[in-house]
Amino acid sequence: MSDLALEPSLYTVKAVLILDNDGDRLYAKYYDDTYPTVKEQKAFEKNIFNKTHRTDSEIALLEGLTVVYKSNIDLFFYVIGSSHENELMLMAVLNCLFDSLSQMLRNVLKNEKNVERRALLENMEGLFLAVDEIVDGGVILESDPQQVVHRVALRGDDVPLTEQTVTQVRHLLPSIHSLLFTLQDPLVY
Image (cartoon, rainbow, N blue to C red; front, side):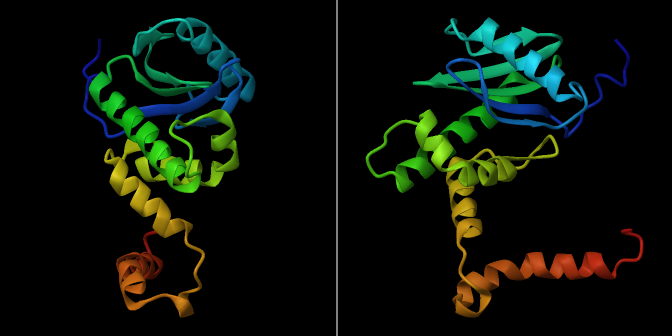
């Protein structure tokens, strides 16, 4: 194996998938070109579902990839990395996603105790925000579900800037400052 392949990289996650109990895609985000077309992605998803839906394992090696997964009622959650990726890091992403969604859906649907297909489909915006808070371009940003839920709640608030409190606006200042700095930098084009 070449030294380049074993060189450490921040690009840990290749894909995040959520499939229903029939193996159909509910959510899929691919972070590289391992499967560039939708047809190849769907074939990979069917293959991964067929290999994992009847087992109690949490880790699989499939098509040269490390797959960590978890099932719950009628959903299958997958986080995929390269074959040499640390399974514990991938599992931390998976657990963060699952726990974040569980907490978010528990807050939205007061009676729900588990993440299930219907509840997830009714709250897809929260799923999109949570995944974006956890992984960005294949780089793991967060593995603490409490932080993810907190950030999604902040991003999900549709309160106009004029009606926000000083504390809410103060939270936005670092982002605004870095955006302005980036726009002024002539090398960022």
